[in-house]
Amino acid sequence: MHDPRDLEITRRDVLKVGAVSAAAAAVPQVAKGQNAVPPSPVLTKVSLNVNGKPREMTLDTRTTLLDALREHLHLTGTKKGCDQGQCGACTVIVDGRRINSCLTLAVMHGGDSITTIEGLGTPGHLHPMQAAFVKHDGYQCGYCTPGQICSAVAVLSEIKAGVPSHVSADLAVSPQVTAVELRERMSGNICRCAAYSNIVDAISEVARSNA
Picture 1 (cartoon, helix red, strand yellow):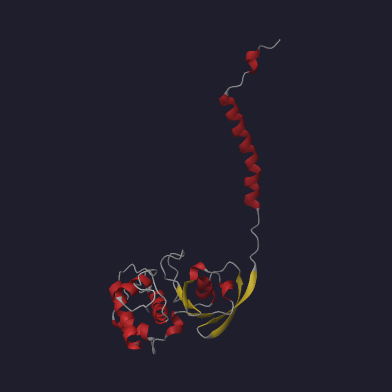
Picture 2 (tube, rainbow, N blue to C red):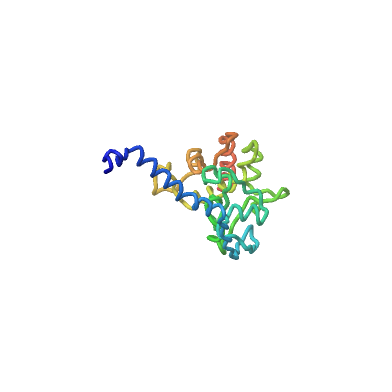
């Protein structure tokens, strides 16, 4: 006859048994994961119109527009900054609108017209916005400058089209090119060197010349 006390199991014993069982079950899964072969990438053809020229690439469907421009077309003027859509260094113009190219996939833009900093001007024939940035020293290290300039060109187009911003005082009236408007509209482009006042001066000059 067994003493009932011999069958008593404490809470600590139950936890020990459970932990050992869980560890034993996890070992095969870990080993399986370590030996698993990663899936092959899905490739597709993507046709873009970049800086006025048709370009066709075969890309992994997960390729961002930024990586397609930099790594496949070697247009390295567009910069990779935060890679999270917060700094604006990767700004390009797609069908007239500025976007963060790090946040969109290349396959989403088949047939779209894309303009990068290389498509705005050349060293011998600068775009007016590029020339204004040089004149007003709207850059220091220059890393954010391509995105700043692309964004600035799009900003003036937005204002000319009458698109209001969060600081537009009257939505029934066309927005004006003021320092307040420009700072708000350019707030998505960050400059660690803090050349903000010079950037506003550069955009303002281009706006006056186009008036």
